[in-house]
Length: 393
Image 1 (cartoon, rainbow, N blue to C red):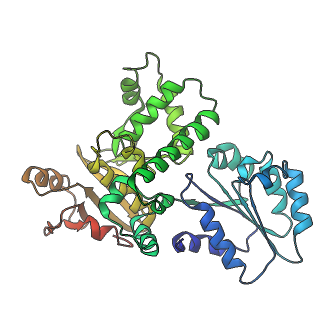
Image 2 (image 1 turned 180 degrees about the vertical axis):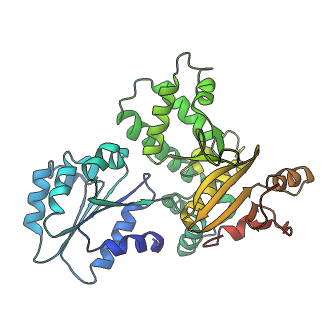
Image 3 (image 1 turned 30 degrees about the horizontal axis):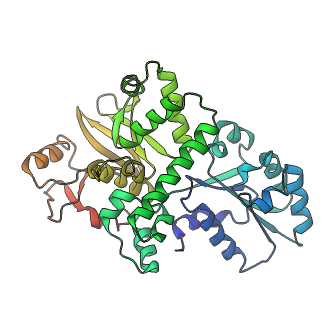
């Protein structure tokens, strides 16, 4: 597996800290591998390391409470600073209490978990000021290229647009095997992590909402517009229920929403949000007859890549014309429009007009899958294949 230095360099300054280091993110995005890479790095200076994987029955069957975990650590530690690594610890009852206790006694504590419980409001309240969290995501394209090179395989942009970046899928040779893996992962996340976790009784309604949202990535919604669509198949569905279900999806890192920023009000419009999938495979596995939604998946991928690069992003309402992203980092600000292609005149005019009346002092960028450079004197065109290999805009 490739070294995911992008994330490890964020964790490294906290190796000696008594803060609990939480490595979190959607299932199967590579959290455990990053933990293993941190362990390898720390093991170069000490062997006073304890690693426990709570998905392993040998661990979960014998360490069944906070007290037993603390006792195990006390019995197996060595002299001096001890580094504790607990993988998928949220499966242990009372794990919060164990973590709070251990961090007080010269341990450096690292934990991973996929369950939404890990960063719930209750958890952050209990550990306020006692932890630092690191969000891990599926591979971006640069990581895919690196990993595929390690595996002796090719990494195409089109494959990324359709099937996304969950690391494990690249170990399977056939698209059939990859699709089966991604469908099983989808079932696990939706059924095991959400329906069972939250004891959702209206399973049909919830699954209908999930399918609609994940097929409709890169689009602006309000809760009421989602409710109106869902009610076509389910007679009873309130806005509160929609908001609650969307919250579950966000807590499990399946979707993310960004606010719309208006030029008229100069503020965020909280009643409209644009929703993006954590990985575009959630859209593609729901498509029939290989009619993949490459246009919206491309925008979703640009969103994921911008977040990976460290930008804060908003949807920008330019006097009624939508610009896909207002991306900011420090004092730098970029207006970014995304289209699959602007080769046709109608598409060219539509996409470039979105920048009308924006100060030319601001950087304006359009990203497309075209091979021809469509840059103008005021708008920079970046080819998708080039954007995907950039470290920043």
